[in-house]
Length: 291
Ligand code: RIB
Image 1: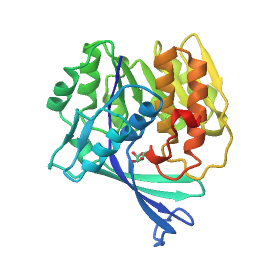
Image 2 (image 1 turned 30 degrees about the vertical axis):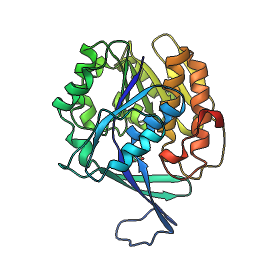
Image 3 (image 1 turned 90 degrees about the vertical axis):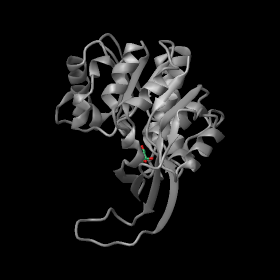
Image 4 (image 1 turned 120 degrees about the vertical axis):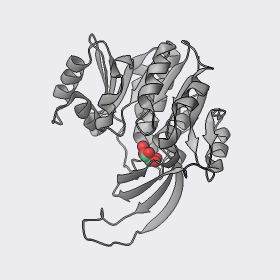
């Protein structure tokens, strides 16, 4: 069994700010750094650090060789990561303020993934394998359909949540991983009441499995028969970027290995509590030995 993570890779331009920039305001940053990021790349790093065999498929521009080297350093298999000159590598502009962030995305090469690349990648995978996707690449519907035809388990981290999600074949998804905002969006309700979000998701998508992360309220696993809650490990957050990605990678790694949801939620909560204590995206994801 291997995990195929078909996902985004972004250069993260990270600006530490005194306060989030307001409309009509010009504000200097307190610091600037460029990091490796993208929900896809971060989740591949988390899976690999958690001890899973992971293949990262995706696309970078000709400026993106560093991403291939970076993934290889953490033993992520990059044979399905394509580099071409059609588009520059994707990037994100991230404002950090008092431990919180705001992110602007530019898809670039992540939005240049086509059916040909998907066919070329999936031909080497089978029903023993798992497909992990986020919502930062193109051709999502085709990817989900084709992976389902192969009998692969499909895990969808519905981030960032937007209207396009409803055009995907969501009935082919086995496990959704969402935060409370994405969960409410997916259930098409406007509330931050967790019980209502959980009930609405169960009603809208019966027979699906869910992991819901809810900041300080902890995290939940639920399906039509079960609901398991996990507390957070409270720490002082310096930068929450990639906390959700760490949770996804560690949860999935542990869940696939032991099929023990409680243990997987606990490990994921621990790992993401370490991520928020460090600055940046991929580089703040802990090694399993740190846990
Ligand atoms: O989840 C954090 C990530 O979201 C960042 O690394 C950024 O690139 C965006 O994809």
